[in-house]
Image (cartoon, rainbow, N blue to C red; front, side, top):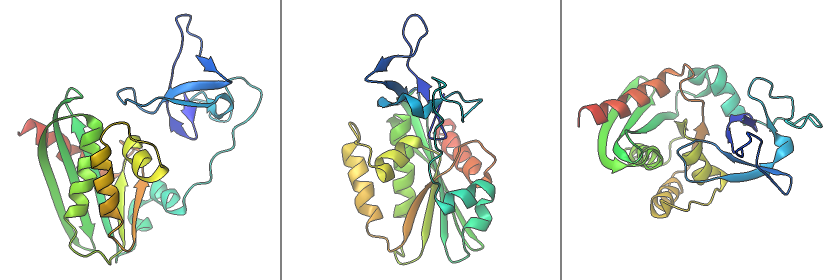
Length: 213
């Protein structure tokens, strides 16, 4: 299904009907994530028809998008100015938990740096967070504009949207503290495997770290 223009998984009962509680549906952003969310049923719609509510009574109002995100969805390169550090990060786990790796692609003007690192046994969520942390720790200057792009709903949720992390609390806290040391840093959620060259490269770096461990 779709919720606020994100692909989500809808919980159903044994008869294949949506589970409803207090006029809310139970959803997950990713099947492997630990967190479930009760959301207003009027905000959930079929993937192939985002404007049609599942109960056909109302139409959902698309959330107001961040201008940077809008630009990134059309042209990532054009959205980031030459004086901005651009960081693509991705994490991968084979088994969830299982052997995990992180991939980081950093760009600043004509300069580019790649990081492919095996981090041991971890979940996919931990790998996504570690990739962000590793990318930020590579930056020595804190006063330059930084845009970090991730395709992880989980990482973006706990770091930007205020989701409460039931697990990985220390890791999330350390990343938030690290983010606070930058003068102009913004995390941007992009769609994974959607043609963004930087995101595809970060994914390849993460998976290769597992294969080459």
